[in-house]
Image (tube, rainbow, N blue to C red):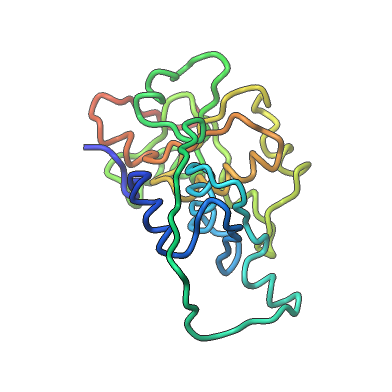
Length: 218
């Protein structure tokens, strides 16, 4: 039981996979997708969680790169394996026990990143239980992305999160820990520094039968 639909592998397994891609702690990494998508943001978060100090998102992704006229190449790229030594940053990750313990706690905000209908419990397209973690506030992850696929700037992100105290610890979740990652990125862009990902997210939360669920805007 537990882990959710997109469980986070163990740090040593993540480090091994990154090393096989030619990445070690000194290798600058720029993550991109077609535009700014949850999967790319999740990889950025994983690198940060493992202590990588030079991990970045290409704002606008491949579409933005091409529209700016920058070059592209094709074909297979050969890489040389390296040894990635993980230095796990525990303050980037929350698990179900921490979330349970902090429900309703002063100085902590839970942030649900799914669309409104999933948050409110009107629909549950991928999970057997609808609703959200009690006390969580709502900020749909796509609202942090402009139409051109770029991340909105710091001031506009602060407007999105105006109801969240910048001094609070913010625990961000979604359905399975992917689409929460753009909101982690957005919060960091807005200047929030105590931001954690609940990697198992809603699909992990509801796998424990005694965990409470809320519906509507509560």
